[in-house]
Length: 383
Image (cartoon, rainbow, N blue to C red):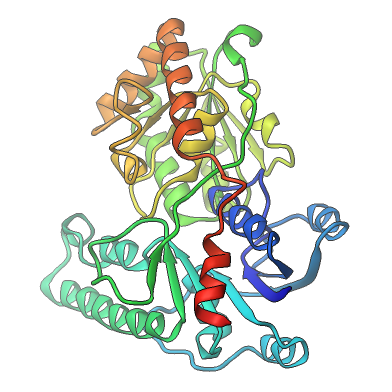
């Protein structure tokens, strides 16, 4: 069998953030044809008790601490000493890394047998930060030019690094780059879950769910925007509804601020994903920055909970998950609040949309046991 080193933030878990779900999808497929060693590269995403449980049945090598915040405008050609030692000792057939940031920090682009799963295109996020008209609004010409110059430097280095990898995978194509010979699309899929009959089982008052990694800037900034600009309008009409927030890693500044907001249930990281969904009636995804596709949209619908989401969260699903049928897509703050109120006041509507959403996910986005995407890559490129 092939020997593979799988380097990723956190662990490949089926009950974590959207990023962990994609890691789980890849890991499960790799195990079908290879011996896989797992190495975490992050700044402490997963609690120790979860790591110890994972180690019981998996080949886990430990963790390399990678600081948060990657200087995208700088080059790094130095392979991390721990990776260098591992690859020399073990003679891996493949090294597969999740996310550009971790690959950059560890110097994985120096390896000749490296596959990078970018998942999202970093250039989309950087463009939104540096060049989007909303981002530069109110800044003087000199500041605007500096931001645009930073983007150009980051874009050049990003594409140069991607060219060094044997294969680069994305959750979807992006208009921020030209499609290269070594680029592939690897679509998001999620594991099967039984639906949660929340409306039949749960007492009032009703709960709404937000779930996602709160150490990820687009998630905590998007939710912070929602809490400032949309949640007050919801509470003005229904003062009993609760927003349940699930996810670890929230910066202290936001934790302090949110603790003063009414009707929030802060849960942090949950070990059992069913506990996150079991007492909620629908979910929200107010994300306004980012790229790729949002796995939590699929997961919520798989569990039988319809959603109110932003257009950013809808990207990649426009042709399959339809506004007003499987979920609501809110184009502005007023619409977001109104759709939430509509679902609160219409149990039959929410049940109908939830059933349709689950059926769409089962038909189009469930993990396939027979998938051989990575096996085909390994055979065609590395043997």
